Amino acid sequence: MIKIENLSVQAGTFRIENVSLTVPSGKYGVLMGRTGSGKTTILETVLGLRSSSLGRIVLGDQDVTVLNPAVRGVGYVPQDGALFSTMTVRDHLDFALMIRKAPKADCQQRVEELATLLGIESLLDRKPHGLSGGERQRVALGRALSFQPEVLCLDEPLSALDDDTRLRMCELLSNVQKQTGTTTLHVTHNCEEAERLADYLFRIEDGRIQQVRTKP
Amino acid sequence: MSSSSELPGDQESTRGSETDTEPAALGHKPSASQIRMSNVLFYLLFVVMGGTYVVLIIGMLLADAAYMAERTVDGLTSEGRSLLSVVSHNPIVTALADERIQYSVWLSLISCSMSAVISVLIAIPMGYLISRHEFRGKKLLDAVVDIPIVLPPLVIGLSLLILFQFPPFRWFARDVVYQVPSVVLAQFSVACAFAVRTMKATFDHINPRCEDVAITLGCSRAQAFGWVLLPEAQRGILTAFTLAWARSLGEFGPLLIFSGATRMKTEVLSTSVFLEMNVGDIEAAVAVSFIMVMAAVVVLILTRLIGSEHQAIH
Figure 1 (cartoon, rainbow over the protein chains, first blue to last red):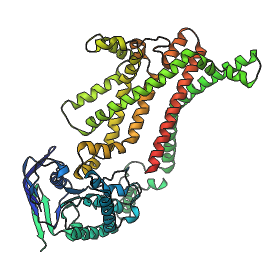
Figure 2: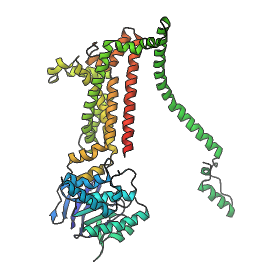
Figure 3: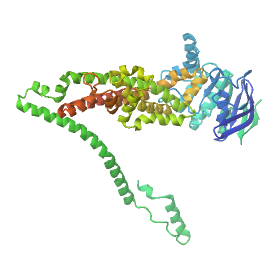
Figure 4: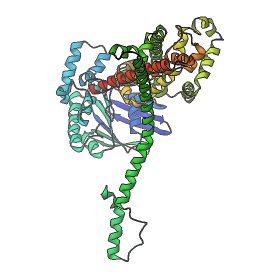
């Protein structure tokens, strides 16, 4: 579950006040809003990269409002992928497990599992340079899922892709989310993307969040 | 290029004239030949203006080389023209045969490398803090780092000398001032500023999202820095090192005051040029200068090679 309660955040001169939303466990929540509406700020607060001035954030059954982002266990896919240019795709999928000092055999198994899930088996020994937009986002998604997080945060992950690739990535995201059952919060300004993916659809406008739709 | 003369505005004015009375023309329509001529002139002017500097640099180096060739040939006319005498009359060989110059070459290589290594070690954390964090007094710190770049070199030397009049520095003054460590310290004082600038620019250009992601994956700040940021900054570190090294090699003003120009003790290549000029031996001065030019060129080429190799990897 992702639960944001009466959250207020100050980002420079920009301020979001008293917003709330809830995405139940295993569901796909999409937060829609125009550029500059503060949706990324909210996502960053859930991740812990930005601290809130008021309110509460609950992930699963734990209040993480003041918890360090490294221990929140939230997978994060930023808009541009933010891949590590010196690492191979395998290193990306391996990274979080390496930091967690997982046994080598487990790492290897997990990397293969993720590569199959995301269809990137043939890219494992390549570096990000030269990967297509869709491939980069698959790698970023794999990296975020590698440590089996309970919660996944996606910040406009498809905005830099062409229409065909976006459609395929939408399907992939939907499938992956269903297979892994990871509670997801996806931020976008694209209506079509939001309609396709959302179990729970929220819209942020003038600093207020409205729940637009709920899939049963 | 020619299509640029057919602006949308032109089409509209034509369309307008079919139906109505002709509207007043808004200035002259630019002619293709005028634009072409202007473009040619624009690039010609820029190439000539920029080229002047390149000609000056290449000219200086060629003049050094020509001077030395001339001296070598002059030496030959008095003796035979064997290959051996070409080598033995070469001013560089003559200079390198002098044990004082040999000492100066070695001290230069060692002191420049040391000051460059220390500069990079200091510049990495400093560049990181200035680039990644907002804190009170950041603008001031940024300005303070620029002081060695804008300060006259002699003033830096004098300031270092004065600094060692006060404790705790005074306690070490006997082992530093006018001794070999002062050479490294004087070179470092200036070179480090350039390294910090380079490292800050390097970190500025690396997407901070990469560290954010690393942190959400479970990294501490240090782990994110070591595993993600540092590998991404490799080329910048190399550039900072080269810049600091080259800067140290050329250092002279602070050295003269803070280290003195004692032969076989605190003499580095730039001091050698000064000392040789002082005793009127221009030939030796040019020869030593040429050694420095070659060292700088070697460092530049090495950096470019390693840099491009690194780039080719990914």
